[in-house]
Image 1: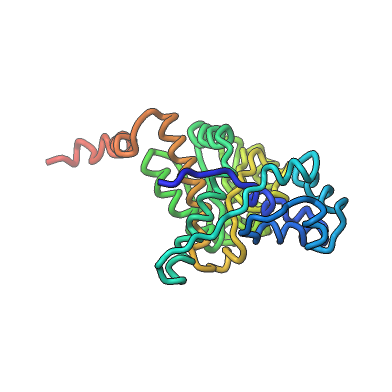
Image 2 (image 1 turned 135 degrees about the vertical axis):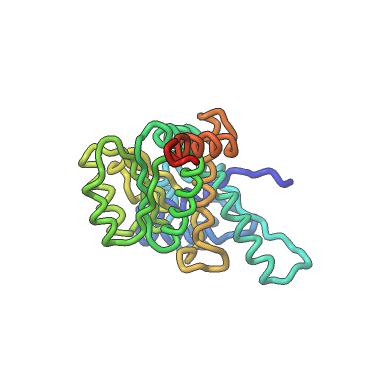
Length: 277
């Protein structure tokens, strides 16, 4: 199995909204490029018709000391030739790309913190619409199997009503691939104001910063939210799987044992003794 290697392309995509027009032109080049070439500032500046100073500002905007440090970290993907049909490879390469980008974005300490919040809080609400709502529903079922008191809220009217149920004992996990689902963001802000812990799962590095307890970045691919080639749920499910695996490790039991224990706790004592013939 091919080893995963860290790439800074997901970082560029996550910070894309922070960039100026010229910086986005530079970002587009590095996101799309698949070729090995001379990446010197002079060559790339001439190729893109920008100044070398613009390249330096672009690199610094991403957190690097300069363009040279950026290029040292940049690892362009190399196109692979196979005998498979183009449509088949488009799907498989899209999944592979998301997995590699997910690997690059994972922060192990953050995954553990989110898992700890899930284990600690009495009630968990999952917010999300559309494909994000489907991911929330799936995660709800998994958390229920290990005994969590959890509910997925996937409709705008329900989201408004649910605000009255939120308290300091709650954990709110909001999911928005674009980071621009206004109803979800506002509902989470309302929950945070009431003292609830909040975790925002998004592909936008500019969304949720400073507003919530944790902002967990997921990998993104252009037009993924529109179902381009693969399901837009996939990158979100990858992160939720990592959180779930960390939760099981924290509880030190496998999912089957967790489910048996949780189920027994809920059904013991039923039916009442007087109803037993």
